[in-house]
Amino acid sequence: MISEKGNRNVVLAMAELVEEERAITVRSAALQALTRVAERGDEVAVAPVLKLLRRVEGTERGDFFSPHLSPIISKNAAKALGSLAEYGDLKALKALHLRVLDDPNPVVREAAARALGSIANMGDRQVIFALTICLEDEDEGVRRSAMRSLKSLKKKEKDDGSLSDLLAEEDDMLEWYATWLWLVPLAWDC
Image (cartoon, rainbow, N blue to C red):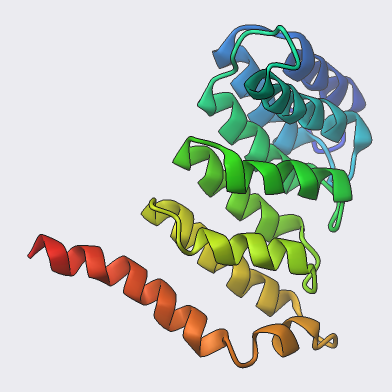
């Protein structure tokens, strides 16, 4: 174990590595370590991860002149955000929403789908819509993560009926549709 959860010095050191380090392996290890030592909602930990995801977004759009960041970093940043961001954090949700719908790498989309399910509020229609779109993704891992996240959002719901109302009629259809998407390619292989 690196350190106890909440150790400020370690959180600060890992956050600095996430923000400043150029070596992919070191930055990736710092992202993983940050999730182990920082508390959920710790802005010192969340800020560099968000900045990193925005930098990746900016690089892809040509807004920044930083070197292209690897899919490994994007995947680990999405996973870290799912562990570190407060539930319902709009900045984190926006960054993950962009990754889940627009990232060219399925490993990144899969991690973003999982992270969305971890931090979204149960009635967040944009997240539900994005995850529903992911049910049609070409990658099986992305489809599975989207389905798990949708189920997770439904399980989070206790007293509030908003997600149940939204998915009540579509629940069986979503389950059937996801199963169909996974089984049809298997049938074609026979």
